Amino acid sequence: MSSLSPWLADRADAVVVIVDVQERLAASMTRRDEVVPRIVALAKAARILGMPILVTRQNPAGLGDTVSDVSAAVGEHAPIDKMTFCCRDDAGFSAELAGTWRGQVVLVGMETHICVTQTALALLEDGYRVHVVADATCSRRDSDATVALARLQQAGVAVTTLEALLYEAVGGAGTGTFRSVLDLVKALDVAVS
Image 1 (tube, rainbow, N blue to C red):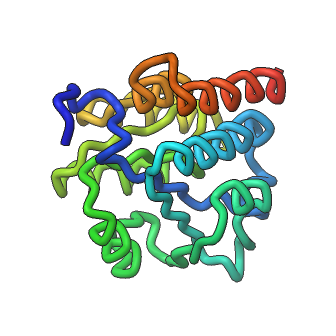
Image 2 (cartoon, rainbow, N blue to C red):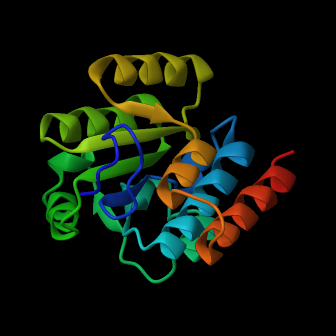
């Protein structure tokens, strides 16, 4: 662990968890066109920064596969299929997470008030430093997401934005890594405007 504040993203100790960004579920999200590109950018940045990525799928028989853009950005991976809303309650997920040997979890995905919130609170209780990227999560109803994010913040989860998280993880300017991540941020500004 670095000397950074536990409230800051630490690329040496963080694992990114993409929760249930699946075709049928995403189709019902009002903010899909904003959220999915941010998750794609985070996945690309995580690969540049050396942060492991875990991808979950809730009941894939019913909700479909991971959105193809997200899957492509993650690269080769084996999604963790689950039936529990809380990812931590799935033995396969818990084993994969423990196997990363990371103490900070960055959560993004769908739905904010169900799977993301339940997972964040459980992982916080387990001693992980949990960050939820507010602009890379969504619910069918914005009011559900708003209440969930306030609840998470009150519980001690670091609620942040994608750009803030990426700049914390990079740590400074003037490197090739910074320029690569900056290019992702700039491209995202164009994509969602």
